[in-house]
Amino acid sequence: MLSVIKSNEEDTEVQIQMEAYLRKRVENLQSAGIQANYEIRFGSTSVKTGEFVQERGIDLVALTSSGWSGEWTWLSGGLSSKLVQILDIPVFIVHVFKSGSSKSPHFGRILITLDGSSNSEQILPYAQYFGNKFGHEVILMGVPQVPESRKYRSPSHIIRLIRKQVVTGMHNYLDSIANHLKQKNLVVRVVVTGSQPVRAIVDVVKREGIDVVMLTSKGRGGFNNLLTGQVALQVVQQSEKPVLIVPIQSN
Picture 1 (spheres, rainbow, N blue to C red):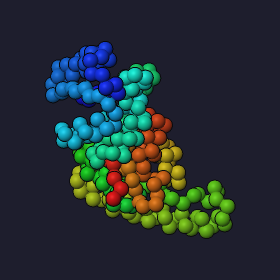
Picture 2: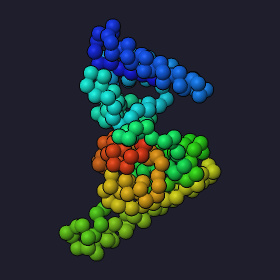
Picture 3: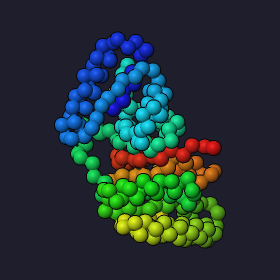
Picture 4: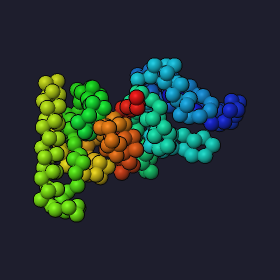
């Protein structure tokens, strides 16, 4: 566990309170048979988290979509976005419920978003791991980048034809990925729907009873509106489901 205090004054009441808080959390995990420890650092949360990840060889960063504000400045959506930009390991974002702690997590149904690019496919090893470890079904989702004809001013038959071609191509692509995952003993299904990524993903999450969404922070070149960290953060906010983001850094 890592906590970063913005103040550079290490001998503060904030540090004492945070140490007590983290010590209790660690004790709870240890009593459940989980190895755990904690560390407190001072300065910029994103910078110190990045340094900690590099020093300790961390494999995954987990945080909530929001947290304490003010002097303690805990884990906020702004931090989530920054971490996705600077880290090269998965970032797991959990939605915060106003009513308090949510029930124990369940990862039975996993949604994977792909756009046909090698960038988006970097999520697949994690999909395979989570699917074999937790899930009973993996759903591969594609969002065609063509408006539905009723929402477009061009002749509707032209838009329908273009969209049909794109949808068919996306189905073929996702079916090939699905067949590969099925050979890894996963239960896989393909969904191609919508034209606006966030809305389409949120709709599928609700309709299919998705437990966790997995995607990369960057998809096909020029289509940054499809698979981006910002899309993932919006999905967290609107669907209230955890999102695993695999950052893809620009070359």
